[in-house]
Length: 251
Ligand SMILES: [Zn+2]
Image 1 (cartoon, rainbow, N blue to C red):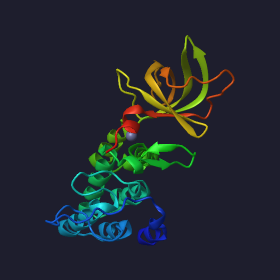
Image 2: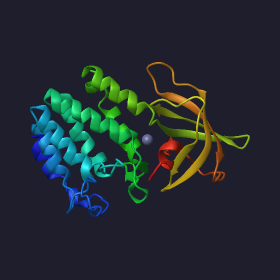
Image 3: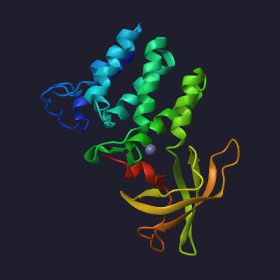
Image 4: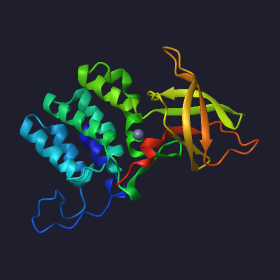
């Protein structure tokens, strides 16, 4: 079933940087030809021992989901994340641990400048790490039954918080926004990236006015230092806020 789903993806349609030319030594992790994430995922799904799992990981980190030595995360890692999560939940123990390492690494790695975004179903160009974190959080219930590995991935996803604005109003030059918070906003807060109407605006600082109460994600945030202030009557309902630190990092 998983193998069929992996093969059903049109991997060639996913933006992928050209493989780097081999260096004289030929050991930079780059391979000739277009990387094939499906082959690596199939191999990991089928792995039953450490050697097979390590070989699959090597394939996936050599230009398919990440690039070799510098380890930049690639857009295909977002498409691969649901399959890796399937392996975390149901795979052989060795494959399971490898999938956790791949997902964790993908959320912690910087992307390449021209391959740093992934269009979400809501139409926002999210940072790759945040798009993967969202897929991890969507499996919260099943991952929380996967012991330490599942809890570890969920904890990593927290740094890639996301705030969905339901309602917003101007307040002394700032914007007060009500909505739902997923993940954990750091304190003291850093900036954010406000996605609205097909464009993204930098937000200088994001602070929590009313924190989410236990069991619910409802929160009120104060957005200050917007690069472009919303005009009167410009509703921010439906806008999404991502961490500025995630959007800024790239190679
Ligand atoms: Zn992120």
